[in-house]
Image (cartoon, rainbow, N blue to C red):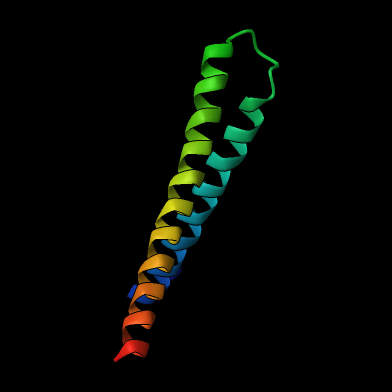
Length: 77
């Protein structure tokens, strides 16, 4: 039996969470391959997967444009 400190417990939890999120991605990719007859479900999972990607890209784009505007303001001053 191990006596784990708080930091060890946290690292174990993050590893499990990373593994779970990784598993979810794989499941999403697996389900996009039309093996089952349920195509509505496949399309929904595909779209949700694509939406999450486009959403994160949009956040990046807005952040970059904000940073560019800030640098333009600083250079004018």
